[in-house]
Length: 328
Ligand SMILES: NC(=O)c1ccc[n+]([C@@H]2O[C@H](COP(=O)([O-])OP(=O)(O)OC[C@H]3O[C@@H](n4cnc5c(N)ncnc54)[C@H](O)[C@@H]3O)[C@@H](O)[C@H]2O)c1
Ligand SMILES: O=c1ccn([C@@H]2O[C@H](COP(=O)(O)OP(=O)(O)O[C@H]3O[C@H](CO)[C@H](O)[C@H](O)[C@H]3O)[C@@H](O)[C@H]2O)c(=O)[nH]1
Image 1: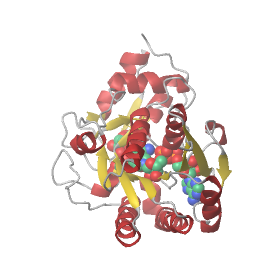
Image 2: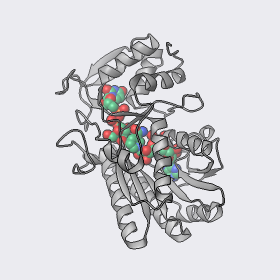
Image 3: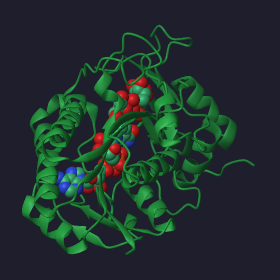
């Protein structure tokens, strides 16, 4: 059998680069295809880099024809909830138009396996917790809507053209490569944990905490934080699943456990010895109070369970990128 290879759209980004590293360590060559709009060229180190846009169907088709990958993992997208409310055009173009372009390139070039980055944002404000895959998907912002439309596109292409897919609905990605080779590098950074670490290290004066009057145990929002290395491994398992002829799937990737913002700040203090200066701000528009997964379907279908997703490991791996030492 020839060596295995996977096209990784968004391979210069945060989750894409961690996944590329893991693929490479398992003997699968990742071919990163990225326009570097939010990704970093320096994060592509484990396979070829193609500078291209997913909206360019002809370029994608040529790339697939040239490299003959066994599957594509489709990370490339715009991924800021707030920005999607302010500029829905960008999100429908890049996330819906871009996914359509990719699926058509796959069809033209005869590539039939797609692993897709979906999101718990497709559920909106869930009626009940934990969130199972059967929970109605009623997104409350354009970002979540574009991810849901892409899931519908996958199902329709599967029915009409025999496409095979796994849609992975990530909860909150966080943490960094334990070897220190990759981290979460966004500019501007909007995610909670990197911003809290920036505040702890003096990179910003304080963390703005968006709301402390939610109906949660301590008043702050609760999220299901999953380590990026666990997410990366789930993609490898999803590829194995499709390669073995497994059925099409849409599964949650979370831990099943929710952590509040205050618990995150306590973990940072425990691991780094630094306290995070904070300022309480009003609630951020569109933030559900609590989101956490029922992770059982990913376990039974893909054999996936998180290994790195306890708060201490998350902070311990992320802290060095902000010049903070983790206490042993
Ligand atoms: N980070 C999270 O917590 C989270 C949660 C749920 C889902 N997701 C999804 O996971 C995927 C990866 O997220 P991330 O956090 O690594 O984001 P990221 O911004 O670090 O990575 C996205 C990558 O896609 C590239 N890209 C964007 N538009 C492109 C285009 N038109 N053509 C080619 N490349 C393009 C960017 O340059 C970047 O390298 C996204 O689809 C995102 O929606 C992320
Ligand atoms: O400076 C900050 C940043 C965030 N938060 C709060 O921390 C929590 C987590 O916020 P993030 O921005 O880190 O993450 P989100 O839950 O908003 O978004 C993440 O999960 C979404 C699904 O709900 C999408 O998939 C999205 O791509 C992904 O970043 C929220 O309550 C937010 O209000 C703050 O208080 N201050």
